[in-house]
Length: 408
Image 1 (cartoon, rainbow, N blue to C red):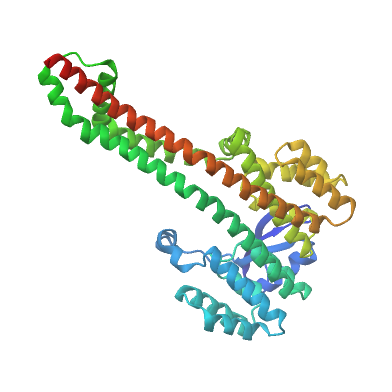
Image 2 (cartoon, rainbow, N blue to C red):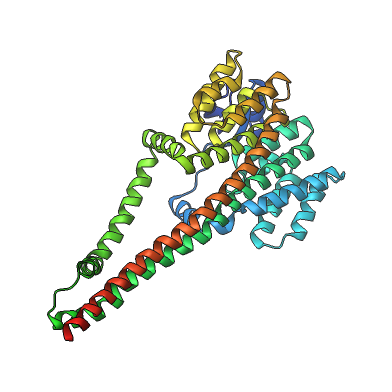
């Protein structure tokens, strides 16, 4: 009998992985369901890509996977088709026909072929793990089992669109400050390494004592010219070393906690975390996933180890019958608004709906916070870079004026 590797959320809310002997992947899924677990993935144990394939997937796999926008759009279109009464095969054929991108058309065609061969929709999606995350596949599987696939896909589309909109808002808000920072640093380096050396021979030939600001700028220019490349290489090495260190649980937990304590960025990070937590939890609960299993999934996808630890601690208290909001409040990570809304949801037995309402509030607060930070950051960058450039130019003009006074 073949062996299958599986990943599931146990009734205790923990992520369980292991091997199971069964006639098929569907049999593994059925066994896990009977045990009260929420199956997320099941695949043959001997399915492992070779070294060359792994390297190619790491370097060039972006073109073979669906982007976040592609996934959100096809999920919404599929939900609309199924909600209109179309069967899954016809809906997938429609998506294949209207797909513009070649990779999207190819992936959808493979999924449709698998479904036409008798494979469940979730199992067909599971054959493309780079495009469909575990959360997506698990919810689709739950929707299939409950006969609510269209509603499940609608909620998944809402989740994906909100997450993508929030991420796009953060990225677009940081583009302009990043361009200003790069342009400012480039201008300063250009002045120190290209413009300043043109004046140094003239100052040396005059033999006069240069003003202190000019001496400092010349020394800084010599340092950048002599050691700039080494500093850049050291920064790259330091960046790689920090990333490797943050891959370990201990340093990552310290880093995530520290980032949440920074006065402005920490407050904004809490809002983003609260939006992601509330949106994911509400979507899972609205799709019929039990609270404990939902919290286990949220802890795996929230993206911050400190917040994940807080969610796992809240899971333990929820198992004992205590409220979810009280434990989250004690962690001090989530905004107080999140706690109050979750508590209201617990008291009214509408935790899923109140979680989604909290997500909408925190997403709006995140967008407003990002706009405010950007509005403050841009003038600060412009002023700082302007002062630095003006200081360099002023030191050169001061030296030239002193040379004119000496000539007279």
